[in-house]
Image 1 (cartoon, rainbow, N blue to C red):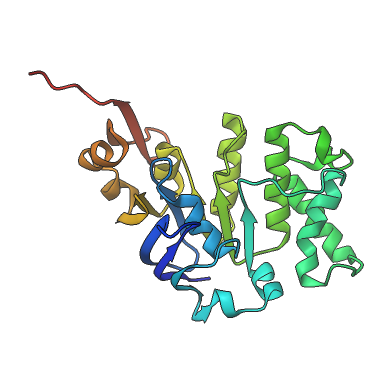
Image 2 (image 1 turned 45 degrees about the vertical axis):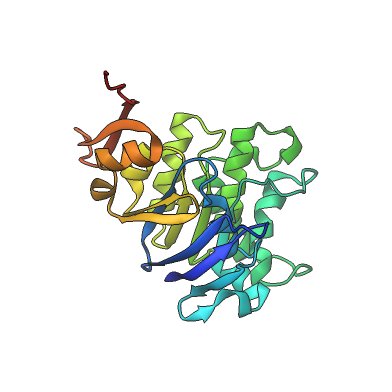
Length: 259
């Protein structure tokens, strides 16, 4: 699913946190959204999953204005793993993941055998199958993060929005979550703190700075030393992973120039 931001501004005050964002994400691409804290990453993502309406501009799914589409249609198309954990802590893990199927049927519909198989598959792919009977309230932060990813996948979305998906995850599950997202064949827009993970998994990197899209392009082109210094106040460089060949970002403290 192609996603387009057309002159989008958004925020919670008269001064928008995101200003005049314009970019098109190709169908099936993995796009990493990076930037310093407070640069507007979560704000921009919220305009896609309809948690925050733009004050200007439009968000387009394909050629349709996302904010004019019926909510159920958006829920069937856009899967979300946000930073704010939803309620339902009294639910079991299986019940929570099954909620991802309801946009396709309605809140009070009975899940079919096919739905149950989708739920089981998503639990398995996210490493949560052994947690299926546990209550959400008994899980660790990392376990809950994997369950919420499984819920988003159970929607079978065409566009997957991930807001810091590696939060609370150990290295093994950080890698498996991003490997899974990259393997789905759908458009993925993921806000990431780790520039190294963004470089490894993204086709395109969007750099936000002070609410504006500062740079967009392939990781090897975007993560040049001058940008790392200017935007992230670190020294660094891009190297090829000796095993996979994927780009890796090596960072070090900003060198202090002498008098």
